[in-house]
Length: 248
Image 1 (cartoon, one colour):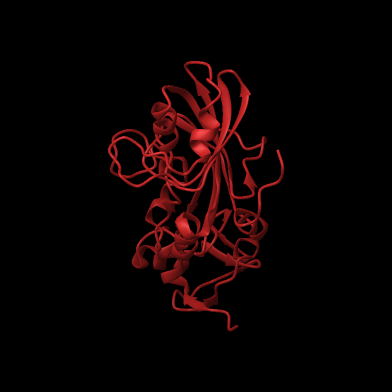
Image 2 (image 1 turned 90 degrees about the vertical axis):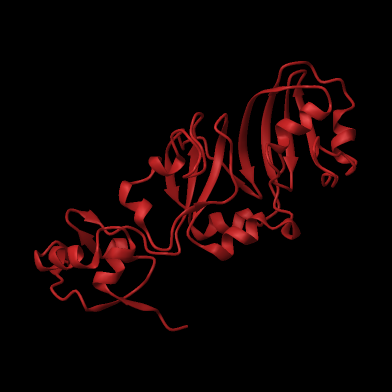
């Protein structure tokens, strides 16, 4: 497959470094360096490869990763997954210029402000739709802490595939409940309906007091990624999303 190329000024503008005019001044000022050599022509076409940050520097730092870009983020409590909702956004956890990237970065699904854990952010529309499509049955696992002890019949209710949430008419797909203690349990679902996990427990007479997502497909949230931190997803991470989860 032929490696795509792009003008230097358009590339940096798409990565959020400024307008093409502003980028032109950056290039003229010798701020863009490839393998130790200053680039002087904003119209020069560069090959777009994943290893660009290893070769090109803008100012004192490696160039930002080009598209397609996917991030693995540990969402903390108290932030929302939308530009439109009130409150601090997960996008504010990223470098400021990343909010001007083209194509734009979007979360793959959402976690509400009071839910923490594994969140994927991408500018790859095909990947986003592949993960969230119900046809692909990508699982999401949550650790739920409950207000009241489990009765013992919740697992059967969730697994039956006939549970209907309040205000809806279509039953939920079967889900797997794994109790850990009287008031904590893993819940693995394949859908992403609005506040689904909280509403599922409400449907069986309980209330979620804390919720954390630790797994999407076969991709786990690693212990070393602190709340609010993120990293660029590798090819192995993307493959793991669509692989069978490892046994708990």
